[in-house]
Image 1 (tube, helix red, strand yellow):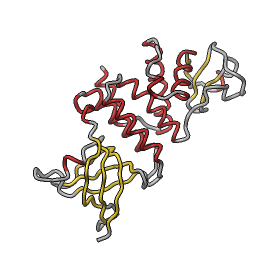
Image 2 (tube, one colour; image 1 turned 45 degrees about the horizontal axis):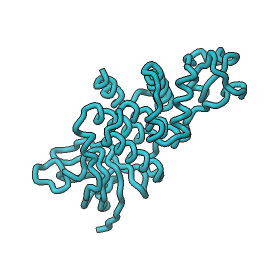
Image 3 (spheres, one colour; image 1 turned 90 degrees about the vertical axis):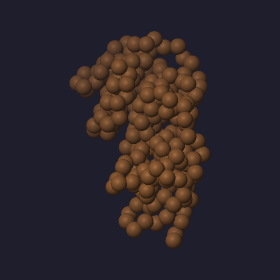
Image 4 (tube, one colour; image 1 turned 30 degrees about the horizontal axis):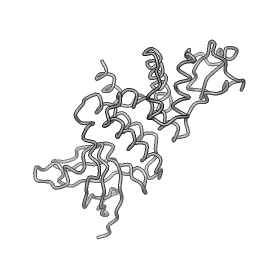
Length: 249
């Protein structure tokens, strides 16, 4: 039997058959992959506690009969148990997991993406406000996917942005100045404060960005902009977004 080792974060699981699961895992050396956990839903399964969503795990993979490898062994390295104690944190972790899964192609190796997911889960477990974690780390996921909008110059004319009558255009990939706002009828007005916060997300680590004092309407505005941006690039709303919004209400 051909065996291989890897480490990764379990992004999501899908029940199949009577006792099996297919796991979507972002690994450190093979990118995103799917693998089958045979019998993991049985009461006496030794693998069950090591293969829960949001778990960082050491894996032993065997070549399966089909296209997917089979998990022959697993040992949890980090459970991020604090996430599971709060529904809002579960919702954010689910959303970020789905977003990372959709923004990254299968077997596209990126240690940066894996580090991002682990950092986001650590922040959720560490007690940071869940919606701030969601906004900051989905911006990082968009950035690593090469989809970050331009926040420093008008995407139409290239001139420096001044804090008056700005608009955000997901389609054009950035901010439009006052003179160019008419080129995209679907662009939405954006405040200078929202642009500043997104710039802080770009330039600062999470520990610093999380300490910035921002008015609640500005945070809401940034969340809405990110939702529009994700919807534009994925061409649909992630399934877990509805769960995230429902829990938020």
